Amino acid sequence: MNADLSAWIPGAAIPWLVLFALYGLPLLHVALSRRGGGWRPPAGSRCPFGPRAGWLVMVLMLGPVGWLMFALRRPRRASGR
Image (cartoon, rainbow, N blue to C red; front, side, top):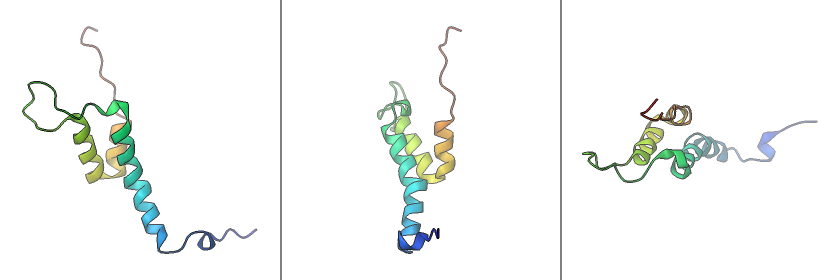
């Protein structure tokens, strides 16, 4: 059995698929995840962006590394241990 990938996917589409897999899917995951935080900044914050926008910027700039940082981050603990 000869598994020739070029018969299924044209050569020009492979870079676009790689970009979509390494940048598009992580951005979509951060944008739709419940763990991403709010879109608006917390009350009293001087930053105009919320946590989710910050994560989106990090994933956009760092690519798969930023997504791994988002996916593997530790959950917040309650302040009363």
